[in-house]
Length: 171
Image 1 (cartoon, rainbow, N blue to C red):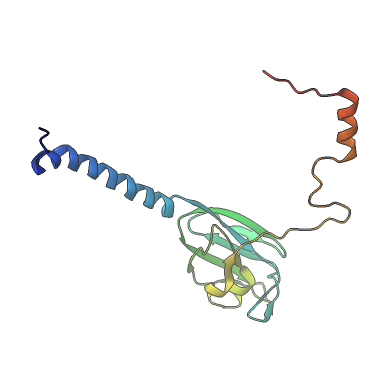
Image 2 (image 1 turned 90 degrees about the horizontal axis):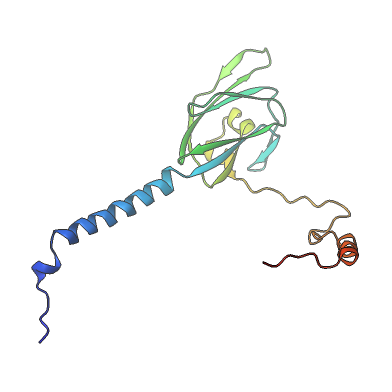
């Protein structure tokens, strides 16, 4: 006759130690996913259009994200900054028409995606950071005369194969 285990035998100290280890591993995985994942913020000094209004690039600007070193931005410059976590602070310094330095108040923001772009002209104009930051999606540029599907080398690769034959090595 097979005897079943009692609740005391099932829920002994080993059960709770194993359960605790599993919960710690799950909590650590969640923490590392949100706070240990590296994201890229592109700080952009290009002319842009936000909410139907055009903003011209700044002639000179300096931006510092979190406690990282400040970087200078001339017209039409974009730099990527690797960051960890989702919430960050940016401080922007620029010049007015009389070459006086103006330091804008630090702005706190959340990264909306793994790759985000923030517009310095929009921040300098005083727009809310939510309007100045968006997901960065690289554009695919078509080069005339080159098709996107032609990656093999075409006729040249076929001619080499005929010349030398099959040179694959099987082990």
